[in-house]
Length: 137
Ligand code: ATP
Ligand code: MG
Image 1 (tube, rainbow, N blue to C red):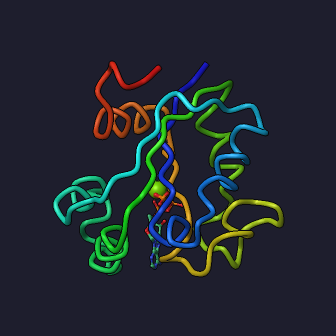
Image 2 (tube, helix red, strand yellow):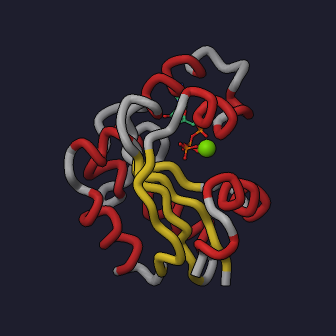
């Protein structure tokens, strides 16, 4: 059993498709171990995406992630990290396989509907960033 962090990004929350995205996870063997809707501050988003701080799109990424509320979740299941990435599809929705979350709900490489941890190591760090131990059930 693995745990991974998922974020439904501001574009998908604004489109009112939170339930449709959660259904993709639940219908594919992942369980919601924690879930909350929050507004990220510029400082939160900057820390969360610190690895991208030197990338040319960092400013836009922080601006986008703070443009409205997000839904953060801990997903649990067998191979949860790779399963979630598979369900999400490629970063650029134009390249995402048909039937993936990004192919169905994302508009652009910035507004790409969801985030998912890219390794088990990062999943642990990202879960601790958003949730206290007693919030993960
Ligand atoms: P995420 O980390 O959000 O799950 P990802 O792991 O698929 O997405 P990363 O390479 O970690 O992709 O990039 C983080 C985010 O930065 C992407 O989701 C996207 O919104 C944005 N991003 C990545 N590459 C670009 C780019 N070339 N131009 C604009 N934005 C980008
Ligand atoms: Mg990433």
